[in-house]
Amino acid sequence: MTIHSDAALIPAGETLEKLTDNLQKVEELSERFQKVLTNRQTHNAALDGPGQDLFGRAAQAYWAEAVHNPAKVFEHQMGFWADTMKHFVQAQHELSKGKLAAPADPGPTDRRFANPLWDTHPYFNYVKKQYLINADALKTAVQDVTHLDPGEKNRLEYFARQIVDLMSPTNFLATNPDALEKALETEGQSLVRGLENLINDLEANRGELVVKLADEGAFELGRNIATTPGKVVFRNRMMELIQYTPTTDKVCKTPLVIFPPWINKYYVLDLKAQNSMVKWLVDQGHTVFMVSWVNPDPTYRDVGMEDYVEDGYLTAIREIKAITRERQINVVGYCIAGTTLALTLSLLKQKGDKSVKSATFFTALTDFADQGEFAPFLTNDFIDGIEAEVEDKGVLPSVIMARTFSFLRSNDLIYGPAIKSYMMGETPPAFDLLYWNGDGANLPAKMAVQYLRGLCQRDELAKGGFDLLGHKLTLDDVDVPLCAIACEADHIAAWKDSYRGIQQMGSKDKTFIMTQSGHIAGIVNPPTRKKYGHYTNPDLGLSHQEWLAQGDFHEGSWWPRWDDWLKKRGGAQISARIPGDSVHPVLCDAPGTYVCKKASL
Image 1 (cartoon, rainbow, N blue to C red):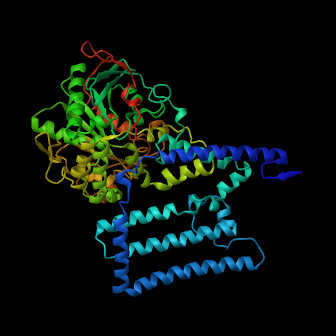
Image 2: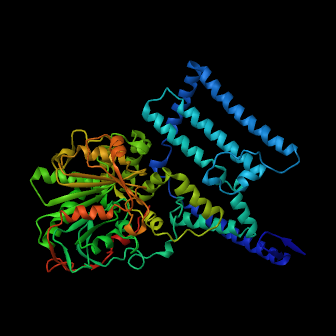
C-alpha cells in the first residue's frame, strides 16, 4: 500500500517511520520550548504596552465621533457591510455553479499573495479578499478620526498598520497556501524544522523572539566579510581606530576618516570586496581611517554624547593628525554619527579649531521637526519606558532598536522572514547585508536618553542649541565645506528632513546629493552595480519639492561624483602611507577586536 503526495510515491512503512521521527522530534522540541519560556527574562519595560492608553483614547474619539457625527460612522459601517456581503454573494454564486473556483475579480495585487491559489482557489481567495476589506475598513476609520491631536493620530495610524500587517492570513498556517503545500510535500518535515528554528531563535535571545534574518554560520569577520586589509593603530574605551593599507603608490595628502553609526557595526561599509566603500576609497587613492565603536555593556551606563564627542571624534581627529602629520582632515558621519558630527563641528568652530577641512554627511538628521515614521516612538510615554529600561539595564539593548526599525517595515523584516523560517522550515539566506543588520550594538543609558530627549524629541540642535561640554551647539556653526548624501526611499532619515537640516548649516560651500533606494542600499551603491541613480541641484535655497523638480538625474552610483568632490579638497598627491607610526604601533589587524563583540540582552 502506498500514500500519494505531490513529491513522490512513498511506501506506507517509510511514511510511518517519518511520522514517528517527527513526533519524537516535536516532543524534544516541546521540552526545549517549555524550558526557554520558563527561563524567559521579564519583558523589556520599553516594549510593554506603549499603545494601550492610545487605543483607549482612540476608542473614546471614535465614540465621540459617533455622537457628534453619526452619519459618518453609519457610512463607515454600511460601506464595510456592503463590501463584505458583496464578496460573500460573489463567492456563493461561483460555488452554486458547481465549480470549485474563485470569483472572476481576484482583487488587488500584493506580493504577500503571490501564490496563484490566492486568486484561483475559492477558500484562499475568500480569506484574502475578506482580509483586504477589513484592512481597508480599519484604515478608513482611523483616517476619519478627528478628535485626536496630530501626534496621537500619527501613533494611531502606526498601530493600526501594525494590527493590519499582523493579521494577514499569510501569517497563519491554516491560511497560508505556501506553508501548507510545503508541509504536504515534505511529509510535515518543514513544520518540524520550522519549530526547531523558532526554538533556536528563542534560546539564542533568552526567550525574546528575534527572527534571524541571515545564516550566521555563513560569515566570519575578517575572513569573508570586513576583509579590506588594514591595522588598528589606536584604541581607547570608546573606539578602535583602523588605518587601511594603501593599494596605490600615491594618495591624497589630506586623510579621510569615517565615523559610522554606533547603533550597528562599521562593516556595513566593508561587507564584501565587490560592494565595500572602504576598499573602493582606498583604491581611489585616499588614506582611509575608520572608527570601530565599542559595543557597550552596563559599565558604560554613564557614558553620554559628550564622551562620544571627546573620546571618539576629537580623539580620532587628533590621533589621525599626529599619524599623518597633517593639520587638517576630511571627515564623514553616517546616520547618528552624522548628527554627532554636526555637534562636533559646532564645538570646533566655537573653540577656533580648524582641524576639519571638509565634512560629508551620509543620511544624517540634524533637524527633527518632522519626526515622520518615528513619531510613535518619540512620545513621552514611550521614552519614559526607554528610561526605565536603561535605568534597569545600564544600556538600551540592541534588540529594542532592532525591533523599532523592523516594525517600520514589518512585512519585510519580521513577518516575511518568520514565515520562511518558522512555517516553511527554511534556513535563513547567506546574505551579507542581513547578517550585518542582525549584528547590532547596545547604547549607553545616558547617551540614549540624551539623544532621544534632547535631539529627537525636543529638536534642540535646530531650535536654539544643544548644551554639551559647556557649549550651546548650533547648526549655524557648521561652516566647513560640506557634502550631504540622502536616500530617496529612506524610512529612517527621510531625505527631505536631511535636506532641511543641511539648509540651516552655516557653510557657504554645500553640495547635496539624493540617491535612489533606502538608508543602506542607497549608500552601499558601488559603481559596478549600475543599479541606482542619483539627483543633484546646486540651489539649496529651494524647498525640497522644488529642489527635486528642478534637479538633474544621473544614472549610476554617486560614489564617483563624491570622490571628485573629495579630491578637490584632498590636497596634493604624496607617497602612500603605511599604517601607524613609531608612536602608534600596530595593535592588531583589521577588523579589530571591538567589532567582534556581540550585543547581549
